[in-house]
Length: 242
Image (cartoon, rainbow, N blue to C red; front, side, top):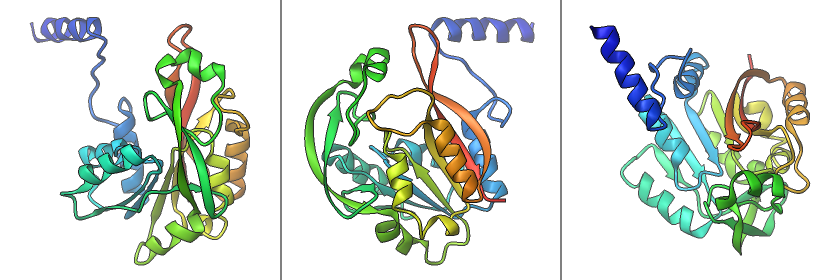
């Protein structure tokens, strides 16, 4: 009777486009991340490319209670980020800026869905798979580096974690983190299997670079799939320094 009820609920959820799983590492991406953060005693999360705070909210929902510092360059998203973090004393939002390989100013391409906005031009591989991501305009933002803006937040942290979600600009972020990376315990970074933005580095180069820095690939999670053919276009790669 109970089994039949569970199957009926599962069929109903699937018909609605929802797939439910137990909150455990074997079945839940968030549970896997939480288990890894706990295993490596992560006490500071640097959220680069925070948008309106989706990643930080997921961390809180998953049970992470440590410090979070978020970085976001888009004006509208940064305002929403400030609102989202307003009642969380352990969640700090840095002043609006992009993070890359140098100091200065940079032009940002604003996508229709906000989360696909990037410094780099978007390729048709991306826009065909997600038409709502097409660029609608541009704006400028201050440009800083991890070494300049992020490293000062490491004071007092024993095991910092770096999350990089910069839509094809990840390699540039790493170029600006040469002094910081040796102090980082873990990294989550977008890894594209095919070119989605002009000039971006693909998954294998990024994995090789992080492994050369002493990190071990811990897990991979699909985050962007072409709905027309089911091809995985992008992973979130999770890396830790043993």
